[in-house]
Amino acid sequence: MLLIAGLGNPGSKYCMNRHNIGFMALDSLADSYMDNNWRKKFQGQIVEGKIEGETVLMIKPQTFMNNSGNSIGEVVKFYKIPSDQVIVFHDEIDLAPGKVRIKSGGGHAGHNGLRSIISHIGPDFLRIRMGIGHPGSKDLVHNYVLGNFSKQDQNGWLVDLLTGVANGFPYLVDGNHAQFLNKINLELQTRPKTANVPKRSDASSADKAKKTDGIFSRLSKFFG
Image 1 (cartoon, rainbow, N blue to C red):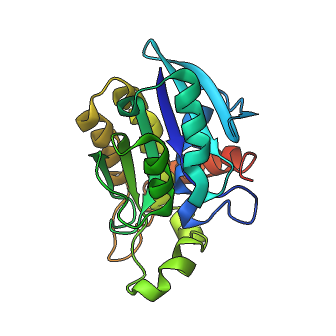
Image 2: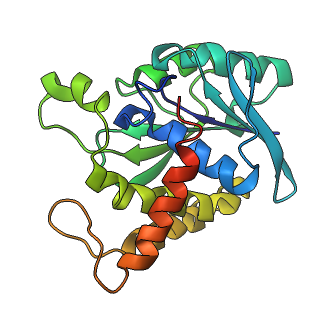
Image 3: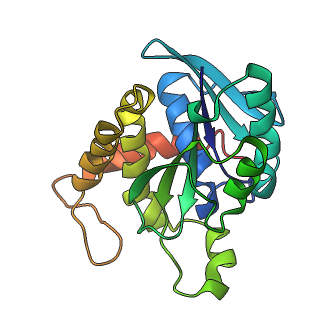
């Protein structure tokens, strides 16, 4: 069994926060592969299915970010899942918006959700670090991560990122990390870049608008 966790805070107040990009990723995955049939268990919302012949359990802890390990630890203990079979999607301020990096093991780098998970299951899990950018000053980080993605973000790189994550997910399950990242990058590269936030070109605006409306209209039903 593979455990896929997404980090965030529960409730409509936080649903579009940058800190909740892990929840958004799991909603996109569940919508693509498991019909978003979430149920309450292990202090979280879970959904289960088969991907590439592998049993995959997804969880969104409902404990609030700083206690994410309470929920994930329960699942790991109940199913006796090795830490190296746990994959965690989380926000990363040290990466530019839309950048994704994969890291196996290591410390928490000040991320309280990761800190909590490490305290319950140890550090040897896989992290999908999803870039949200940095506000420029350490003093601004708290309000920044708990602030909402702008409409421009939602209609731009964010929807492309979530689409790419869903497209590449079977490769992630199969352990092909390079191809997973490639699928994300291919999706992001379809949108012309500017110095700030990627914007739609006239040529692709209709397709991008349809994709944006589709993903966020579906995910909005599950936020909160």
